[in-house]
Image (tube, rainbow, N blue to C red; front, side, top):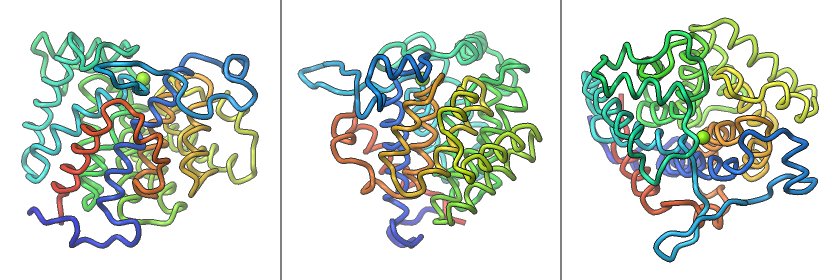
Length: 331
Ligand SMILES: [Mg+2]
């Protein structure tokens, strides 16, 4: 059933604003963390000063426009989101949507929109198997547990914000194209569940416990790691210490790092995105997850206007997010 989102009131901000905020928030986080990926805290500070990055530090130019480029996280999330927007109003369409995502990933691996941006090995391996005709459910490596699938799982929470079970289930199934390790499945489930609860307007603590519960349904270790980091946030632990420990290369670590940042900055989009982008390790993916969650919580109005303006393909991403808002699946 398709309805106009304006008829749905989730409390301020409106659902439409939350959907657009999540998509652009994730892309902004990705671009903020683009130059700091692979760097330690010390290396980030050596290069960008005592506060690390405080805005976009990497700029490209194309067709006379100067912009801050995102990475593979946004490229792949866009493929997922486009497939969902095209089919997302049909409960029986999972296989068709997954096939479309698989085709998108296969194409991405040889000719990605905008060129390759440090793609992950497991994503490239899975995509190669998809190109070879392997079924999407079998393409991912059984032991692959990097953050390459959780970084693109948030669209399921947006489109299926009214059906948390479906959001989780589809997010997990989509992970199987590239990542089948339990930590990757658990992280995808948690991310989808968290975004669902954010779009619904749940209290911050409720969102985080829904994420822990969703993770725990698929991997106890992921839930335990997330709980420990939330306890760290509660006691005011040093973010350098916690994020330095997590680094975010593995799916459960990226998820946990993002949850820790979101727990510390419930209402401050800018501070949260910068903390994610200045995290050691997989900064762009951690900041992507932070941006999706806080964007769905605070809405597009809370995201700094200059960051929205300067992000790569901002108009296309906003148009896609608006189409997603139009296609939201109602119960
Ligand atoms: Mg990336």
